[in-house]
Image 1: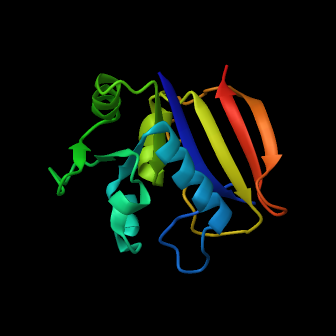
Image 2: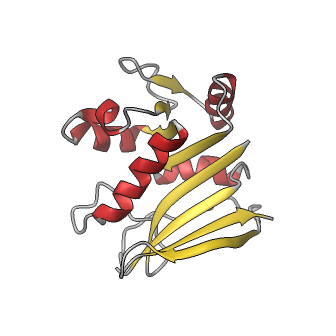
Length: 169
């Protein structure tokens, strides 16, 4: 199964946190993320990302009208009509059983690392944003992590944002 992770990365290599009040995600990067999720039909997020999305006018279901949203959380058993699971494996199984061939890991950092540290990610799409931050997230926390990727495609999402698509070797 293809497992794609999309993240916005600062110039100093940190994951840009959606709930940081010192900067805002560039609109083009956010639109790409939303379009990708709706195109493939699903997205896996964590509780903090869900909370941020719920503050957007229209809520999560309006942002992702064509996507099955799955939340990974060990502390919340259920939320409204949202599928909530407590592991990466259960999220993947749920979406595979629904017939999906690709899944999108949409964040936040804890969910990224849940999938990365288990070496489940096959594709990375990083949007490199020209900003230095002191409090961004760190990808890959496991000491044993050593997954090799190669560049599949690179393009300028805007005149300021470099997007690189990596695939696992």
